[in-house]
Length: 192
Image 1: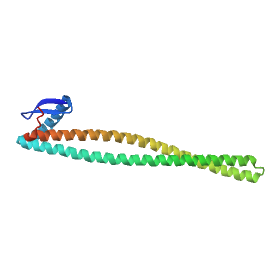
Image 2: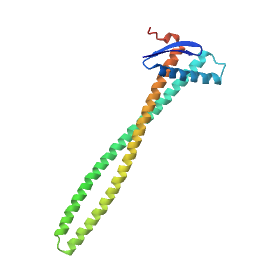
Image 3: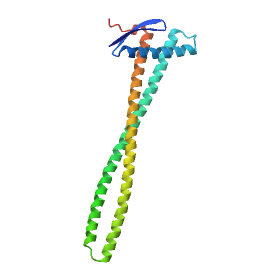
């Protein structure tokens, strides 16, 4: 548990939390930075007005973070669904490929057993068509594997973005709580 004494806008506060002192100092620096930006834009604002506008700006950041988080979550679910569909298609292609290979083997056996030219030509034509179908399936399979690889990469990227947004959301929640606590002395928690 961290504890740190800080001074914000001339007032001293004792912050305590489950985070370490370094983190608490970062939260305070961020809040001070936001307050200083507001004061720099309008030096006639009262301390209460600066605090309220800072709180509103932090809530705005949280809302936007929530929106980004929800959008990333939606994209993540879409990518996951696409990946499952591609995996199903790959399984279907493998099954179809297996059937084609069995047909090709049967045709080759028939070809070897065939003695007349007409049957041989017919079987050869069927075999050529099967070879062509097989090559097309192989090309489709390779394309799907490539797409699946890209989707997996996108899925991982989205996952990391989602984790980053969760951390930002959590940080913003803490900043807002600290800001609200600093503006209302009645909300101070004294654990001494």
